[in-house]
Each structure stands twice: as C-alpha cells, then as structure tokens.
Image (cartoon, rainbow over all chains, first blue to last red; front, side, top):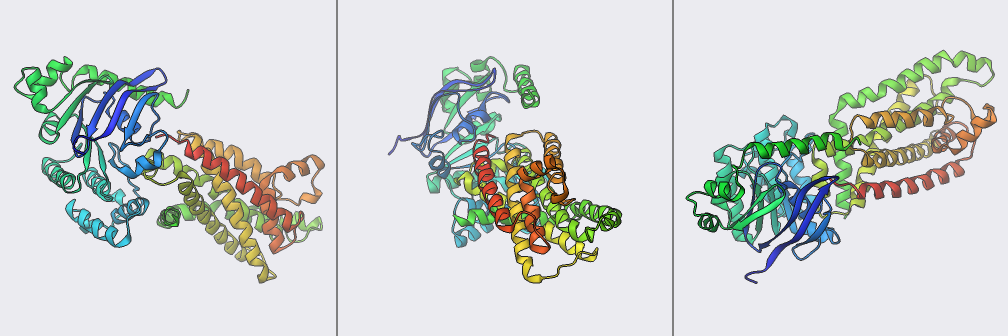
Length: 268
Length: 248
C-alpha cells in the first residue's frame, strides 16, 4: 500500500467559455502525502480543487479521487474528502455550534462522537466561549478558524484546503498546521492544499506542484525543486522555474480577466 | 437519511425565527389588503348582494401571503450561493434530492406559519370561522399552497445567479397568479375568458380549497386537492432536476 496514489489526474482541462482556467494538467498524490499546489492568484488552483471535489465538471481529462470518478461517482468521492474553501461558506445566521452540528449531521457522524469532537475542535480554534453566538458577529479571522474546525470534523480520508491560512495571523497559522499535520499522521489522512505562501509550501508539504497560467510547471519536494534549479531558496527556484515572482503583475492581469469574466459572465 | 431533511428544515425555521423584521415585514402587505380592500370595497360588495366581503376576501389574502412568502423563499438558494453556504451543502456526501426536500419543507413551513398569522389577524378584522371542525382542512390546503410555490421559487432560483433578477422575475409571476386566482372576486360571476384563465391557474385551486373549507367552494374540495397534489409533484420533480444541475 506504500505508493498507492489516492488522487490521479490526467490531462485535465477546464474552460469557462473562451477562458482556459486549467490547461491540460496531469499529476498524482500519494496516500498520506502532504501535497501543495503553489502558484499566484488566478493560476487555476481553486478551479482544480473544485473539479476534484465534484463542484465543477471538467471540460476534458481523467480524474480519480480515492479511486472514484468525481464525474460519475460523486457520492463516493464526497464521502472521501473534507474541504475548507477559500471563500467563506458558513451560515451567518446560525451560531458557531449550529454550523458545526449541521456539518456533523451532513457527514453522518454519530451524536456522541459529534458532540465530543465539536467541543474539542471549537476549543482548539479558541471559539468554544462564543459557540452560541451567531457567526455574523464574528471577525474574518474567527470565521476562518471556524471553517477549519468544521472541515476537520468528520476526519476525512483526504483533506482539501484552499488557501487555508489566508488572513490568519502567524500564531494561528502555526497552530492550525500543527493540528492538521498531527491529524494527518494519526489518521493517515492525505492533505492537498493550495497556497501562494512559499514558506508555507516549503515548511509543510512533502511535495510541491508549481502551477502557473493553468499549467503545472514542475513537481517535486522543496529540496528537489531547489536542487534542479541550483537555487538556495524556494523563492529563487520559483523565479527560475516560472520566470517571475509569485506576486507579480502578470498574475494580477489574469486575475483581472477572471474577475471580469465573473462579473459579465452571468449576464450574457 | 431523514436527519438531513430534518436539519435543513430546522435551519430554515431558525433563520425565520431569528429574523423578526422579515416576519413582521411580510405581514404588512396582507394587512393592508385586508383593511383597504375589505373595508373599502366591502360596502359595494354587500350592495351587490354578495354578503360580507371580508368573509370572502380573508381566505384569498391568507393564500396571497403564503404565495408571496413561499415564492420569495427561493431567494435563499441565491443567498446561499452568494455567501458560500451552498458549497458546503453541495460538497457533502448527501443526495441533492434530500437537500431539495429539506429546503422545500422548511420554506413551506415558514410560508405556512406566515399564513396562519394572517388568518389569526383576519379574525380580528371581522372574519368569522363558523365551524372549527373545518379548520384542519383549511390548514392542509394552506400547506399545499406553501409547498407548491416554495418548490416553484426554489426551481427558479436554481436557474439564476443574479440576486437582483430574482425579485423582478418573481414579481412578474406572482402578480398575475394572485390577481387571476379568484382570491379577490367570485369566479362564478367573472366573464368567460377570465374563467378560463382562472381555471388553468394552480393557485385558484389552493384559494378555493382554503375558502371552501372555511366558507363555500366553487370547484369542489376534491378537485382542489387533486390539482394541488399533481402540481406539487410536477414542480418538485422539475425543481429537483434544476437543483441537481447547480455548479458552484
């Protein structure tokens, strides 16, 4: 079982009308691995996660998640993963506890285990004191912490984290990764996360896929990436591999295109 | 499996209960209609030998308040999309049919409760219930109206991404549904072309069911019931289909 690939992607393409968000990518993730998608905004990271998690249908290509197809075997795939989205996905009108409970019921966790874990997780993200308050009274960072706690509630086989630490302070960020990595080890959970923080990818991930303009440019451990480009730091390696820094103008112009597509796309 | 439907239902009720402004706000329009039309047109109605207008009107306004609340419930799908909660439900290993059923039942319960409130208010404005044994039948018809139009509102919302378009489209649909349903005037005296339109409007059967249970029916309660049930089944199937096709 050592080298079993829990995620397999072959020639995945996702187009939105005339815009190609993900352009023919192939990669695999081994069971129990911590795998990072590293790239600037608009590189196609979120779109890839959405196709892996059944939320978007790929335009073409083959995907297997836990040996099931996210296109034809959606329920099996959905049982296999947990996800923390990049954008908020909480019900603001419900309390923190109710949001957790809702998730627990949706993932069919028995009542006793559910109550125990909710308490444990809310304490861990330091929201236990405010469990009975409506989420709309929370700050951005608190909402983020609640989402992470919720994503971990059902102890999934694969955990998808889309920019999980965006907007968190360094302390909470470290704290969160400690917990996730411990859980990954204890439960043999695979973690697939996207980030545009180089330090985060370097520190946490076993392997990193560098994605840029909808294409995977290179895959390897942080060490391998640095070695193959004869770089001292991952930052330097990234620069050599993609030809630009992670937050430069090119990326933001693509981001601008995406935003425009989002704004006008729905009205055509 | 039923726990999914239950928690979706419970969520709708909690949201309704916590938003008192919405609860009271939606009572404004029915009260206005009852007072303005009930008392304003009441004298004319009586002179024409039709009896008390408020007795005739109240069941129609109860149906109206249910129709409006039920249809606008659909906007919660768009809210959930906008605020991201839809992703949470759609990424879960739960069939979308169950999500849709829970959502529809929850929304329908909210609309139904709103209808009950209007019915109670109408009692203070001069509406009489002569036979309380008939009240359960009226309540059943009220719930059927709520179910049908919550499902319709949800189906329409599943097709839309634009929050601003939803109220426009819904208003475009509910106004003719309401005015051409016999809620405001007796069907039997209407000209023939209007009678035909009223006959093909599903709300007419809901209004007639509520009115028939409390006062007198023009179509017969059995026909009302069968038409409502058939419409509910068809609209729910269509709605589930659209809802299952949502991508986020």
